[in-house]
Image (tube, rainbow, N blue to C red; front, top):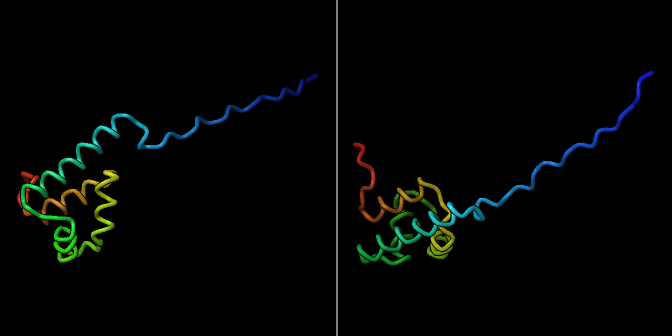
Length: 95
C-alpha cells in the first residue's frame, strides 16, 4: 500500500533590489561623480549637456538628465553618450 505524502514546496528567495547590493551602490556613486566631474571640467551645465545629447539623437530633457544622474543607475551606453557629448573619449578603441 502506498502512502500519499504531501511535500511542502519551498518558497523561492525574495528578490533583492539591485540598488540594495552594496557593490552596485558603490559604483553608482562613482559613475555619478564621474559625470559630474566631467561636466565641471568642461564647464557644461545640465541644460547644455541635454542640448548636446539631443543633438546626438538622445532625447532627454535637462530635468530628466538631472534625475538620471542623481539616481546613477544608468547603463554604460548612456555614460559613453554623455562622455561623447562632453568631447571626452573613454574608449581606447578606434571609432
